[in-house]
Amino acid sequence: MDLVTPGIGLLFWMTVSFLVLLFLLKKFAWPVLLKMIHDRETEIETALNSAENAKAEMAKLTAQNEQILKEARLERDEIIRQAKEAKEKIMADAQTEAKAQADKIIQTAKAEIQAEKENAMAELSAKVGELSVEIAEKILRRELSSDVKQGDFMKDLVKNISLN
Image (tube, rainbow, N blue to C red; front, side, top):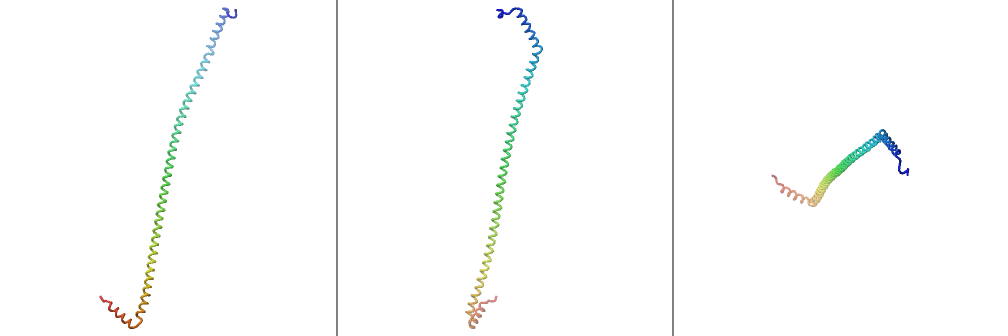
């Protein structure tokens, strides 16, 4: 039974050893352990603060990226709108210019047609005049083939001429 119930001397020396060990731990090890725990706590707190700062910075960067994307989309839309306006203006200008050229060509063609028409009318008048003179000449030659007919014709002409 000696193993189960220790003696008084053993209890005394175990208590003294424990107290000496406790004193030595408190004097030398405990401050070092507390300092290490405190340093570790500070490191963890610093790391958490850094993580919070990084998270806030990431949120800020994300917001900036969203703003930049929004501005880029607006700028892209503005460029597309300006390009469409420029295209429409160019097309309208081209249509106006084409219409003006077509009108000019039509006016030139009308003027040429009118000039050709006038030339044809003048030529036709000249031909009609020539034919009339030729017909009149032939009629007069037939009618005035004799001297008697010529004399009668001259008398009629003189009667018809009136002096004012």
